[in-house]
Length: 334
Image 1 (cartoon, rainbow, N blue to C red):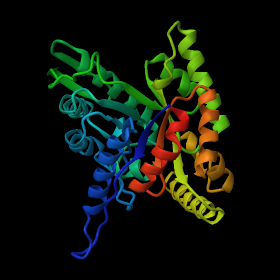
Image 2 (image 1 turned 45 degrees about the horizontal axis):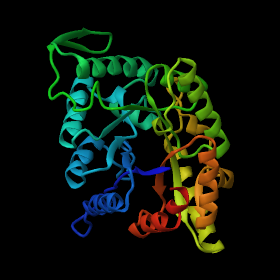
Image 3 (image 1 turned 180 degrees about the vertical axis):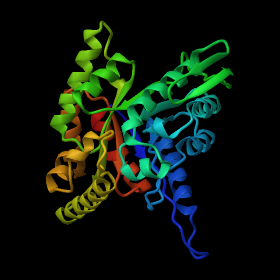
Protein backbone atom coordinates (compact mmCIF):
# COMPACT_ATOMS: atom_id res chain seq x y z
CA UNK A 1 0.00 0.00 0.00
CA UNK A 2 0.97 3.61 -0.52
CA UNK A 3 0.18 6.39 1.93
CA UNK A 4 -0.19 10.12 1.44
CA UNK A 5 -1.41 13.09 3.46
CA UNK A 6 -4.76 14.85 3.24
CA UNK A 7 -5.70 18.24 4.68
CA UNK A 8 -3.69 21.41 4.88
CA UNK A 9 -2.33 24.24 6.94
CA UNK A 10 -4.23 26.76 9.02
CA UNK A 11 -3.69 30.40 9.91
CA UNK A 12 -5.14 32.53 12.66
CA UNK A 13 -6.24 36.13 12.84
CA UNK A 14 -5.06 38.26 15.76
CA UNK A 15 -2.91 41.05 17.06
CA UNK A 16 0.85 41.38 17.22
CA UNK A 17 1.08 38.65 19.85
CA UNK A 18 -0.28 36.04 17.43
CA UNK A 19 1.86 34.76 14.55
CA UNK A 20 -0.56 33.99 11.72
CA UNK A 21 2.18 32.30 9.69
CA UNK A 22 3.13 29.68 12.28
CA UNK A 23 0.50 27.17 11.17
CA UNK A 24 1.75 27.31 7.58
CA UNK A 25 5.39 27.01 8.62
CA UNK A 26 4.57 24.00 10.80
CA UNK A 27 2.67 22.33 7.98
CA UNK A 28 5.46 22.90 5.46
CA UNK A 29 7.96 21.27 7.81
CA UNK A 30 5.49 18.43 8.39
CA UNK A 31 5.28 17.76 4.64
CA UNK A 32 9.05 17.92 4.25
CA UNK A 33 9.46 15.29 6.95
CA UNK A 34 6.74 13.15 5.38
CA UNK A 35 8.73 13.06 2.15
CA UNK A 36 11.87 12.00 4.03
CA UNK A 37 9.87 9.22 5.70
CA UNK A 38 8.62 7.85 2.38
CA UNK A 39 5.05 9.14 2.17
CA UNK A 40 3.79 9.23 -1.40
CA UNK A 41 1.77 12.44 -1.70
CA UNK A 42 0.03 15.38 -0.10
CA UNK A 43 -3.47 16.49 -1.13
CA UNK A 44 -4.66 19.94 -0.01
CA UNK A 45 -8.25 20.98 0.62
CA UNK A 46 -9.74 24.26 -0.57
CA UNK A 47 -12.20 26.09 1.67
CA UNK A 48 -13.27 29.69 2.13
CA UNK A 49 -14.95 31.93 4.72
CA UNK A 50 -14.86 29.36 7.55
CA UNK A 51 -13.19 31.47 10.20
CA UNK A 52 -10.93 28.48 10.93
CA UNK A 53 -8.04 29.63 8.73
CA UNK A 54 -8.28 26.66 6.35
CA UNK A 55 -6.28 26.62 3.10
CA UNK A 56 -8.04 28.79 0.52
CA UNK A 57 -5.31 29.06 -2.14
CA UNK A 58 -4.22 25.46 -2.50
CA UNK A 59 -2.28 25.95 -5.76
CA UNK A 60 -0.24 28.74 -4.19
CA UNK A 61 0.74 26.52 -1.28
CA UNK A 62 1.49 23.61 -3.61
CA UNK A 63 3.81 25.86 -5.60
CA UNK A 64 5.82 26.51 -2.44
CA UNK A 65 5.79 22.83 -1.53
CA UNK A 66 7.04 22.01 -5.02
CA UNK A 67 10.18 23.99 -4.23
CA UNK A 68 10.63 22.29 -0.85
CA UNK A 69 10.16 18.70 -2.03
CA UNK A 70 11.55 16.58 -4.84
CA UNK A 71 9.48 13.39 -5.01
CA UNK A 72 6.03 13.69 -3.39
CA UNK A 73 2.99 13.97 -5.60
CA UNK A 74 1.20 17.31 -5.04
CA UNK A 75 -2.59 17.18 -5.14
CA UNK A 76 -5.69 19.31 -4.77
CA UNK A 77 -8.66 17.79 -2.95
CA UNK A 78 -10.39 19.61 -4.38
CA UNK A 79 -10.36 22.84 -6.40
CA UNK A 80 -14.01 23.89 -6.61
CA UNK A 81 -14.53 24.81 -10.26
CA UNK A 82 -17.70 26.96 -9.92
CA UNK A 83 -15.70 29.58 -7.98
CA UNK A 84 -12.81 30.02 -10.44
CA UNK A 85 -12.15 31.45 -13.88
CA UNK A 86 -11.26 28.21 -15.70
CA UNK A 87 -8.57 29.73 -17.95
CA UNK A 88 -6.75 31.39 -15.06
CA UNK A 89 -7.05 28.12 -13.14
CA UNK A 90 -5.63 26.12 -16.06
CA UNK A 91 -2.66 28.51 -16.23
CA UNK A 92 -2.00 28.33 -12.48
CA UNK A 93 -2.27 24.55 -12.30
CA UNK A 94 -0.03 24.07 -15.34
CA UNK A 95 2.54 26.32 -13.67
CA UNK A 96 2.54 24.08 -10.59
CA UNK A 97 3.02 21.05 -12.83
CA UNK A 98 5.92 22.78 -14.59
CA UNK A 99 7.70 23.92 -11.43
CA UNK A 100 7.25 20.57 -9.68
CA UNK A 101 8.65 18.58 -12.59
CA UNK A 102 5.30 16.98 -13.41
CA UNK A 103 4.05 16.09 -9.92
CA UNK A 104 0.61 17.73 -9.90
CA UNK A 105 -2.52 15.67 -9.15
CA UNK A 106 -5.49 17.88 -10.03
CA UNK A 107 -8.59 17.12 -7.97
CA UNK A 108 -11.77 19.05 -8.80
CA UNK A 109 -15.29 19.29 -7.46
CA UNK A 110 -18.57 21.20 -7.51
CA UNK A 111 -18.60 22.42 -3.90
CA UNK A 112 -21.26 21.80 -1.28
CA UNK A 113 -20.92 24.28 1.58
CA UNK A 114 -23.64 26.95 1.40
CA UNK A 115 -21.58 29.67 3.09
CA UNK A 116 -19.02 29.40 0.28
CA UNK A 117 -21.61 29.66 -2.50
CA UNK A 118 -23.16 32.61 -0.69
CA UNK A 119 -19.80 34.31 -0.20
CA UNK A 120 -18.94 34.07 -3.89
CA UNK A 121 -22.51 34.99 -4.92
CA UNK A 122 -22.74 31.78 -6.93
CA UNK A 123 -26.09 30.04 -7.09
CA UNK A 124 -25.84 26.41 -5.93
CA UNK A 125 -28.31 25.44 -8.64
CA UNK A 126 -25.72 26.55 -11.23
CA UNK A 127 -22.92 24.44 -9.78
CA UNK A 128 -23.28 21.47 -12.13
CA UNK A 129 -23.37 23.62 -15.27
CA UNK A 130 -20.41 25.69 -14.10
CA UNK A 131 -18.46 22.55 -13.22
CA UNK A 132 -19.02 20.89 -16.59
CA UNK A 133 -18.30 24.00 -18.67
CA UNK A 134 -15.17 24.84 -16.67
CA UNK A 135 -13.94 21.27 -17.01
CA UNK A 136 -14.39 21.45 -20.79
CA UNK A 137 -12.39 24.68 -20.96
CA UNK A 138 -9.56 23.41 -18.74
CA UNK A 139 -9.11 20.16 -20.64
CA UNK A 140 -9.15 21.99 -23.97
CA UNK A 141 -6.69 24.58 -22.65
CA UNK A 142 -4.24 21.85 -21.65
CA UNK A 143 -4.48 19.78 -24.81
CA UNK A 144 -4.98 22.30 -27.63
CA UNK A 145 -1.93 22.88 -29.81
CA UNK A 146 -3.51 25.94 -31.38
CA UNK A 147 -5.40 29.01 -30.26
CA UNK A 148 -9.07 28.45 -29.63
CA UNK A 149 -12.28 30.28 -28.82
CA UNK A 150 -14.87 29.14 -26.32
CA UNK A 151 -18.35 30.65 -26.22
CA UNK A 152 -20.47 29.04 -23.53
CA UNK A 153 -23.35 29.79 -21.21
CA UNK A 154 -21.15 31.01 -18.36
CA UNK A 155 -17.75 31.71 -19.93
CA UNK A 156 -16.46 33.24 -23.15
CA UNK A 157 -12.80 33.28 -24.22
CA UNK A 158 -11.66 34.68 -27.54
CA UNK A 159 -8.60 33.46 -29.50
CA UNK A 160 -6.57 32.18 -26.54
CA UNK A 161 -3.67 29.84 -25.93
CA UNK A 162 -2.90 28.77 -22.37
CA UNK A 163 0.70 29.00 -21.24
CA UNK A 164 2.70 27.29 -19.91
CA UNK A 165 1.59 23.85 -21.07
CA UNK A 166 1.66 21.21 -18.33
CA UNK A 167 4.55 18.76 -18.33
CA UNK A 168 2.32 15.71 -17.90
CA UNK A 169 0.57 14.63 -21.07
CA UNK A 170 -2.11 14.90 -22.14
CA UNK A 171 -2.56 16.72 -18.82
CA UNK A 172 -2.06 16.13 -15.07
CA UNK A 173 -4.13 13.28 -13.61
CA UNK A 174 -7.59 14.54 -12.72
CA UNK A 175 -9.38 13.38 -9.57
CA UNK A 176 -13.03 13.65 -8.57
CA UNK A 177 -14.55 13.31 -5.13
CA UNK A 178 -17.67 11.16 -5.59
CA UNK A 179 -19.91 8.99 -3.45
CA UNK A 180 -23.26 8.43 -5.17
CA UNK A 181 -23.63 5.59 -7.67
CA UNK A 182 -24.24 8.09 -10.46
CA UNK A 183 -21.23 10.17 -9.50
CA UNK A 184 -18.98 7.13 -9.31
CA UNK A 185 -20.01 5.94 -12.76
CA UNK A 186 -19.64 9.46 -14.18
CA UNK A 187 -16.09 9.64 -12.79
CA UNK A 188 -15.21 6.33 -14.41
CA UNK A 189 -16.81 7.23 -17.75
CA UNK A 190 -15.03 10.60 -17.89
CA UNK A 191 -11.51 9.34 -17.08
CA UNK A 192 -11.28 10.66 -13.54
CA UNK A 193 -9.32 9.09 -10.75
CA UNK A 194 -11.44 8.75 -7.62
CA UNK A 195 -11.22 10.39 -4.19
CA UNK A 196 -13.29 8.62 -1.53
CA UNK A 197 -14.23 10.67 1.50
CA UNK A 198 -12.91 10.57 5.04
CA UNK A 199 -16.20 9.86 6.82
CA UNK A 200 -17.82 6.88 5.06
CA UNK A 201 -17.64 3.53 6.83
CA UNK A 202 -15.23 0.85 5.64
CA UNK A 203 -18.13 -1.18 4.23
CA UNK A 204 -19.48 1.81 2.29
CA UNK A 205 -16.02 2.56 0.91
CA UNK A 206 -15.92 -1.01 -0.39
CA UNK A 207 -19.31 -0.62 -2.09
CA UNK A 208 -18.22 2.59 -3.79
CA UNK A 209 -14.93 1.14 -4.94
CA UNK A 210 -16.75 -1.84 -6.46
CA UNK A 211 -19.12 0.43 -8.43
CA UNK A 212 -16.22 2.48 -9.81
CA UNK A 213 -14.10 -0.58 -10.63
CA UNK A 214 -17.01 -2.31 -12.36
CA UNK A 215 -17.61 0.80 -14.49
CA UNK A 216 -13.94 0.96 -15.49
CA UNK A 217 -13.72 -2.71 -16.39
CA UNK A 218 -17.13 -2.66 -18.04
CA UNK A 219 -15.81 -0.16 -20.55
CA UNK A 220 -12.93 -2.46 -21.47
CA UNK A 221 -10.24 -0.62 -19.53
CA UNK A 222 -7.90 -2.01 -16.88
CA UNK A 223 -8.57 -0.93 -13.31
CA UNK A 224 -5.52 0.54 -11.53
CA UNK A 225 -5.95 0.61 -7.72
CA UNK A 226 -3.59 3.60 -7.50
CA UNK A 227 -6.28 5.61 -9.30
CA UNK A 228 -8.44 5.43 -6.16
CA UNK A 229 -7.41 7.26 -2.99
CA UNK A 230 -9.31 6.77 0.28
CA UNK A 231 -9.05 9.48 2.94
CA UNK A 232 -8.95 8.23 6.53
CA UNK A 233 -8.49 10.05 9.83
CA UNK A 234 -5.55 8.68 11.82
CA UNK A 235 -4.67 8.65 15.50
CA UNK A 236 -2.37 5.95 16.87
CA UNK A 237 -3.22 5.37 20.53
CA UNK A 238 -1.58 3.31 23.26
CA UNK A 239 -4.27 3.37 25.97
CA UNK A 240 -8.05 3.30 26.27
CA UNK A 241 -8.04 6.81 27.70
CA UNK A 242 -6.10 8.11 24.71
CA UNK A 243 -8.44 6.28 22.32
CA UNK A 244 -11.51 7.83 23.95
CA UNK A 245 -9.99 11.32 23.78
CA UNK A 246 -9.21 10.78 20.09
CA UNK A 247 -12.81 9.74 19.35
CA UNK A 248 -14.13 12.80 21.17
CA UNK A 249 -11.80 15.07 19.23
CA UNK A 250 -12.85 13.46 15.97
CA UNK A 251 -16.53 13.80 16.88
CA UNK A 252 -16.10 17.53 17.50
CA UNK A 253 -14.50 17.92 14.09
CA UNK A 254 -17.33 16.03 12.37
CA UNK A 255 -19.84 18.19 14.18
CA UNK A 256 -18.10 21.30 12.83
CA UNK A 257 -18.10 19.90 9.29
CA UNK A 258 -21.80 19.14 9.62
CA UNK A 259 -22.61 22.71 10.71
CA UNK A 260 -20.63 24.23 7.85
CA UNK A 261 -22.24 21.86 5.36
CA UNK A 262 -25.90 22.51 6.11
CA UNK A 263 -27.69 22.91 2.79
CA UNK A 264 -29.91 25.95 2.45
CA UNK A 265 -33.21 25.91 0.69
CA UNK A 266 -32.94 26.27 -3.06
CA UNK A 267 -31.20 23.09 -4.11
CA UNK A 268 -27.71 22.70 -5.43
CA UNK A 269 -25.02 20.07 -4.91
CA UNK A 270 -25.12 17.93 -1.79
CA UNK A 271 -22.11 16.02 -0.57
CA UNK A 272 -22.54 12.36 0.28
CA UNK A 273 -20.69 13.23 3.49
CA UNK A 274 -23.79 15.04 4.73
CA UNK A 275 -25.52 11.80 5.70
CA UNK A 276 -23.11 11.46 8.62
CA UNK A 277 -23.00 13.30 11.92
CA UNK A 278 -20.89 13.36 15.05
CA UNK A 279 -21.99 9.98 16.42
CA UNK A 280 -19.53 7.44 17.79
CA UNK A 281 -20.41 5.16 14.88
CA UNK A 282 -19.11 7.71 12.39
CA UNK A 283 -15.80 8.08 14.22
CA UNK A 284 -15.44 4.35 14.81
CA UNK A 285 -16.35 3.14 11.33
CA UNK A 286 -14.67 5.85 9.27
CA UNK A 287 -11.34 6.38 11.02
CA UNK A 288 -8.08 4.69 11.91
CA UNK A 289 -8.13 5.26 15.66
CA UNK A 290 -6.51 2.75 17.97
CA UNK A 291 -3.28 0.87 18.65
CA UNK A 292 -0.99 -0.05 15.75
CA UNK A 293 -2.18 -3.66 15.53
CA UNK A 294 -5.81 -2.56 15.18
CA UNK A 295 -4.97 0.00 12.51
CA UNK A 296 -2.99 -2.64 10.62
CA UNK A 297 -5.99 -4.99 10.74
CA UNK A 298 -8.31 -2.30 9.34
CA UNK A 299 -5.91 -1.42 6.56
CA UNK A 300 -5.44 -5.09 5.67
CA UNK A 301 -9.22 -5.39 5.41
CA UNK A 302 -9.30 -2.42 3.05
CA UNK A 303 -6.45 -3.84 0.97
CA UNK A 304 -8.28 -7.18 0.67
CA UNK A 305 -11.14 -5.24 -0.92
CA UNK A 306 -8.87 -3.58 -3.47
CA UNK A 307 -7.77 -0.38 -1.70
CA UNK A 308 -4.05 0.28 -2.23
CA UNK A 309 -3.81 4.04 -1.69
CA UNK A 310 -4.78 5.79 1.55
CA UNK A 311 -4.59 9.51 2.34
CA UNK A 312 -4.09 10.07 6.06
CA UNK A 313 -5.70 12.91 8.00
CA UNK A 314 -3.47 12.99 11.04
CA UNK A 315 -5.64 14.12 13.97
CA UNK A 316 -2.58 15.19 15.96
CA UNK A 317 -0.80 16.80 13.00
CA UNK A 318 2.53 15.93 14.61
CA UNK A 319 5.75 14.72 13.09
CA UNK A 320 5.94 12.10 15.83
CA UNK A 321 2.70 10.62 14.50
CA UNK A 322 4.19 10.42 11.01
CA UNK A 323 7.16 8.53 12.40
CA UNK A 324 5.00 6.20 14.51
CA UNK A 325 2.89 5.26 11.50
CA UNK A 326 5.99 4.72 9.36
CA UNK A 327 7.68 2.57 12.01
CA UNK A 328 4.74 0.67 13.53
CA UNK A 329 2.20 0.32 10.70
CA UNK A 330 3.81 0.67 7.27
CA UNK A 331 6.13 -2.36 7.55
CA UNK A 332 3.16 -4.71 7.96
CA UNK A 333 1.64 -3.39 4.72
CA UNK A 334 4.76 -3.18 2.56
